[in-house]
Image 1 (tube, rainbow, N blue to C red):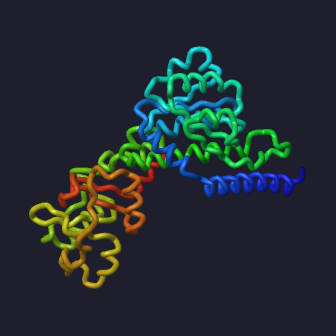
Image 2: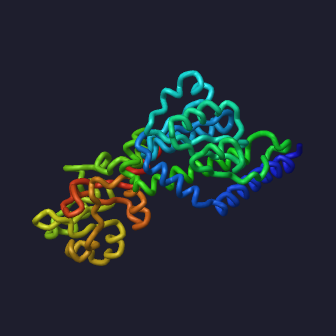
Image 3: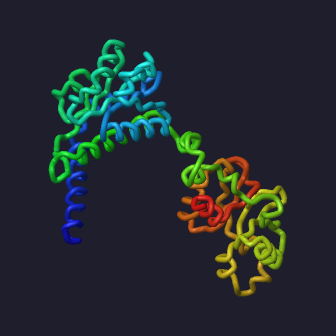
Length: 321
């Protein structure tokens, strides 16, 4: 194959699979919302099963459910037939994936759920399949045909299953009101975990804070900015509340007669001050939106007393260790 032929092959696969996802989105029915409602009421685990490539997708879906606040477990159909059915409790719900809906290895887990009156959500490409007919709720993916040139290797079908699984996970997550803070509890490691940590974990405190009193001279402000190295100094009242900030930009805008001006006349009033529980990701977003490089941190949303400061580089270093 020539390079252009290879590129065309890749484009064909991606176009077909994206087309199939679009069809699935258009044909999403009340069975989807019924599935989410059923999963929302689950008092136990979400048991996800499938074999072959469908099994690989099932494992990913189970992992996504678990990481977004809905305990889930993947059970291999073959292992289920040799004792792992014992992992399924009366309060569980099963989500079973099979493109044909006729996979023989799924027979035992389907039969067990039926005998135990456990709900089954089936995902297949045929509403007339054995899986669909034995499911409490049947979700049907469009039978577009595989992207494989022989029409055999699971490609389009597994992409559709993955997309539908993600849709179930996200819709359930939203219905539960699963927040960023809750998300961080399940993702303490890696870059994602770092960005979800509270800003208090990386803020500079005490003697590192660049602060001057409202009655200080501009010469004091310049010295404080130079000494602390944040390119900014906070201006506080006698009670300790942050009433303004002086940044490099404020200095440039007031160069003429700068040292003769009062701190209050140079500072930017009503500066942003964040609660220490704000996560790193939200802090970084706010700094980008506000076009600032440093931000002061207080101990609560109501407090205006600065207890810490964070520079944008602190956030970037944490997100890119």
